[in-house]
Picture (tube, rainbow, N blue to C red):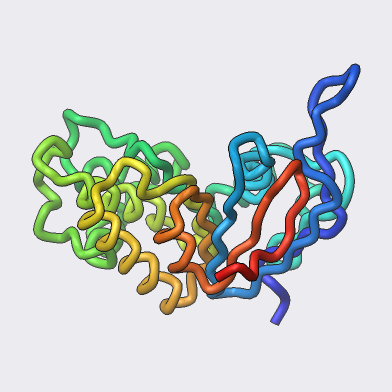
Amino acid sequence: MRPAVELRGIGRRFGSDPPVIALDDVDLTLAHGSSLAIVGPSGSGKSTLMHLLGCLDRQDTGTYRFEGIDVGELSDDQRAALRAQRIGFVFQTFNLLAHRTVLDNVMLAEVYRGTSREGREERARAALERVGMSARERFLPVRLSGGEQQRVAIARALMAEHSLLLCDEPTGNLDSVNTASVLALFDELSEDGLTLVLVTHEEQVARHALRRVRMVDGRLTEDESW
């Protein structure tokens, strides 16, 4: 089976005189169903790598293949379609609409993608069941704990048949109890075959990934310190 993600010789720089090298000759291969933690100091290139994996940015050099597709050969519209159909995002801030119910917030993922309304509510309920939030579908976000809000955000990211979930500091706003709950959910999703990439500063979060890499000055190395 071809890899979920394959990066070869990826380079990305910004500005000039002198340019800022955000990614420097990055190689990375991820199998389907694997989980990866990206750790490193601020400004090391973690966010740039995340944006590139999510088809939000383009490399200057090298090749990015997503499920065998050469992403660099796609138009902007094709990249947006690939992102909408196959890649989900979870952020530190939950980005839920306070005046809409949990179910509405999850359904909005398809509204923004322009997906047909037929079956939308059923798909949203299935996503909420997958993250253990079915009983809260009529609640407003303000009535949920931080961990529950993050579970709703994950359900929203799972509305499509995504094969890659990119998580940027997903537990940064959570206490230890809710962090443990969300990490347990990530473990379940990984066991179900979803490919997970976690950007984090937290050792506890990084240790839940099957593999960890470190970014320093735009260069990526395997982290074997744990």
